[in-house]
Image 1 (cartoon, rainbow over the protein chains, first blue to last red):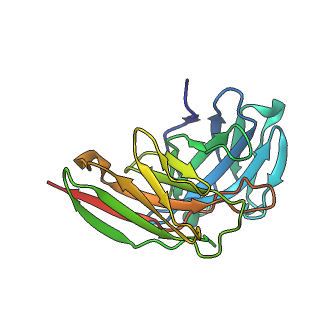
Image 2 (cartoon, helix red, strand yellow):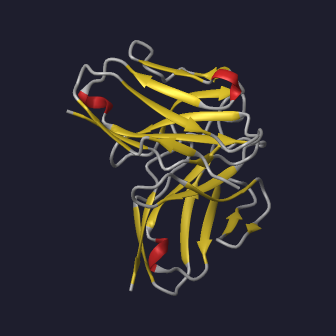
Length: 113
Length: 111
């Protein structure tokens, strides 16, 4: 089975610019997650979707970050405007059900200069 | 915050068993323990999960204590490719879906 696909793999932008990341989950997986991983730390959950509805976005900095999952399949995560501290790897994951494990993509490495 | 505690780093000789401990003293009765690992420049990779019984798959074994307050991930014959950061996660959240990662254990397999 195909894994979680993410693009782009790398992105370099200047502060105050905008950026968007794309994720295609494993087919049939209803739950989709976006995580932020800063160098040397474990991943931190930003937002969780169940189909096309938001389950948890309590840790999403909503003044600059937004995410959507139209039609309950693909998802995009946007940052506008970016700050230096947003430099991180952005990971997308999906899962089949309540106790099913999460399956992660290889992430997008964002560098903000 | 993560509900688990792991040692920050461990070493293991190639070919020997690697035993990675995890404490989760506040685990609830219906919470599962999951193990992931992350190799540099890749996303976390699922290894194994369990509720109360010991589990084994082609990658590893998971031993959960009877009181469920701790667990051990066992890699039976560690290879250099097993060098990675290993995360022990207890599922938290109202919907039983949220995974909270701690800093994990950096395992170095030495030749």
